[in-house]
Image (cartoon, rainbow, N blue to C red; front, side):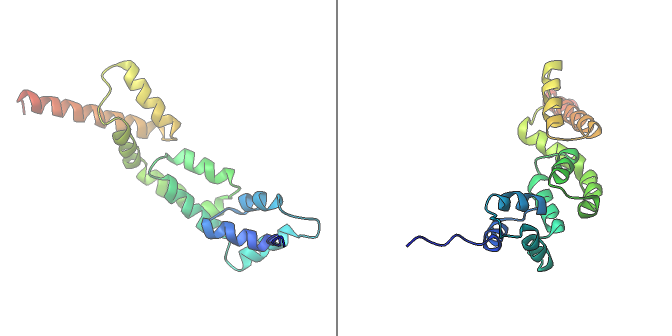
Length: 161
């Protein structure tokens, strides 16, 4: 005897048990399984009313997953692509901007660890950080810090203090 197909509500709860979803993302996933008699909007409204679906929790989850690897503009762009409005994004922009310099430094340090020795190497490092969504000012500050660190290490190795 074949198993009955799970209802939209059951599917939604299964998706939400795995991780947070935005309303737009969950709607897209459930639409494939909706049949004529199903009211997808009613299911989504019920999930929100019961606090199973929360745009704020989704934003927090996405920011926490992405912050260690990406810059502010990339994360904010991803939040907007999930259909979140400015209200759901809330204070994330300020929080991300305040930590961007340190996050850019950590991403650069894990990827490269040493300052570029020539213009081509410098351009490669800049492009990498740009593609990760870091601001121009964060990239410049990171590469200045790397250059300064390299010159300090060079002075230490030559015995000059």
